[in-house]
Image 1: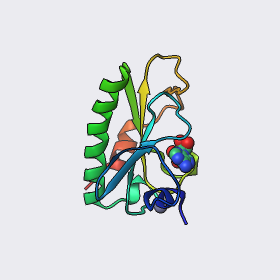
Image 2: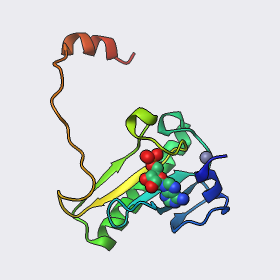
Image 3: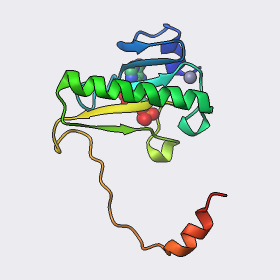
Image 4: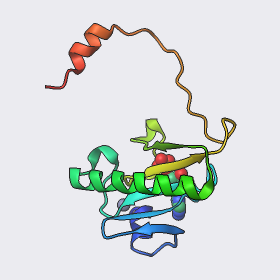
Length: 132
Ligand code: AMP
Ligand code: ZN
């Protein structure tokens, strides 16, 4: 059984800030920054890439709505909106969720940094990744 399914079913308590028939949004227990929130579909999907289209649309709509609401209420200056897929990307709970992480300063506990890595052949990569 999945911990977020337990939260959705009310077996485990959560600090819920929004709920409808398809989605529950609650404060992340770790509070990377003040107001850190998880937007979670009620139907179990292992991760974001597994979600059906209807669920994806609704989850993202709610994430946008709550993102704006949290920004306004906390006075944060920005927000990271992210989802991790599989352990290698940092996923620890295998039930789809979107993190809303308000940002107050560049020194917040979250660091998202794009570093230089090995050069890629963009023409070859583009040919490989063309979506037809
Ligand atoms: P991820 O590592 O992207 O899978 O995110 C999972 C998140 O779930 C982490 O940020 C945890 O702090 C959070 N989390 C785990 N258990 C709970 C819980 N019982 N209530 C609220 N958040 C939780
Ligand atoms: Zn689940």
